[in-house]
Image (cartoon, rainbow, N blue to C red):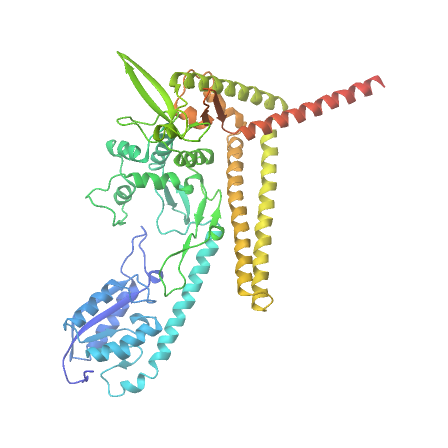
Length: 563
C-alpha cells in the first residue's frame, strides 16, 4: 500500500456522473448534457483552485448511467488510466456521484485505491484520503455508502412501481416505439399511428397472406427502396443503433419481417412487462410468467385487424415453402394433407411432350414406400373440388347473412359476444381460485401443515391450471375480437364473404381465409375443412331458435284470434 502525501504533485481525473432519470431534455426530446453535470464540474474546478498540487489530466463523465453498479463506460476508461499510471488522484463531487453500491464502492475507496496509491477526494463529504485524519473519516464512509445504497434501492422500487402502474393502466412505457407507430405529441405514453410507416406494415401482413415468405417480403421491400425500420428512424432524427447491422445502410431482413408479423401491438393491444430483473443490483433479464404480463386491449388505434393477425399467426405455423424460382407459395401450401397418415401432400409435375401434368402424392409415402400409400391425385381434381366447396360455402354465408338481416342486424354477434364473455369470466374465476389456493398452500407450508414436497406438488398443479385457463382466455379473446370485427365495421360478420361472391378461381388469399384443411383419402375422396365451422353452426342454431320462436308466436296469435 503506497503512502499518500499532501506535498507531492498529483495527476488527477475528474469524475462526473448522473442517472438517466435526472437528465435534462430539449423540446425535441434529444438528451442534453445535464445541468447537474455542469454543476458538478464547476464545484470541482472551484475546489481545485485551492489545491495547486493537483493537476487535472482528464475529465471522465457518465451522464445517464446509474450509480447502482460500476458498469459505466467512462468509469472503466478512468480505471484503465489509473492502472496505466496516467492518473493517481480521483476527484468527485460526493460519494453518491462515485457510486451508490454499498459493497463495491467501499472496496474501491478502502481497498483498491489505497493499494494502487490513488488519492481519492469526495468534496461535499469532506473526505480526502491524503489528509492526516482520513483514517478517522473512513469509519463514517460505510454508513454514507449504505445510505446511498438504500437511496438507490428506494428509487428502484418507486420506479418499478410507477412503471407497473402505467402498464396496468394501458400506458406505453417502452424505450423504443415499434415501427408503424409514434409517440403522441400530447402524451408520451400513448401510441398513435405513423401515417408513413403504417401502410408498410399493412403490406407486410397482406403479402404474407398472399403466400410470400418473410425473406421474399424483405426482398420486395428492399427492391422498392423502402427504408428498413432502423433507417427510417435514423432519417427522422433517431440516434438508435443496432449491433446486428453489418452494412452502411441497414436493409430489411427476414428476421425483421418475422418480428413485425408476430407483434400483437399492431392489433391495438399492448403487451408489456414480459421481462424483469431480480433487483436494482442484478441486471440479468428474467422472463416473467405469461400470467404476470401486463396486457391491455384497445390501448391504441390498430393497424391490423385481429382476424387478420390471427390468420397470419396460423399461417406461420403451416409449412409454406416456396418452389424454387417461384414468387410465392402454391395456393394449397400448408393446407393439403394425407387423410390416413397426416403427412403433407407433395406436389409433383410430370411432362409428356409439350403438356405438363401436376398431381399430389403423400409426403410420407415419398419418404418411405412402406409407410403409406401414394394417395396420388390430379391437381386439377383437387382444385375443382375445393373451388366448388368454397363457392357453396360462400352462397350459404350469403343466405345466412340475408336471414340475419331480416331478423335483427347484429343480433347474432351480440349473442355470440355475450357467450364468449361468460366463458372468459369462468376462466378468470379459475385463475383467481388457483391463485388463492397457491397463497393458502404457502401459508400451510410456513405453518408446517404440509411438507416442502407437498407444497411444490400443489403449486405445480395450481400453476398448470392457471396456465391452461390463461391459454383458454387468449383463445376466447381472439374469437371475441374476430366477432367484434364485424361490429366495428357496423355490418354482420358474414358480410365479409361478399367480397368473395361469384369467384371463378382460387387464389392464395381465398384459400387461407376460407379453408382450414384439405384431406386426401386413399380412394381419392377429398375432405375440405372450412374455416369458422363452429361459428357457422352457431348461426344455424341461432336461426333455428329464432324460427321456432316465430312459429310459436304465430300459433299463439292464431289461437287468440280464434278465441
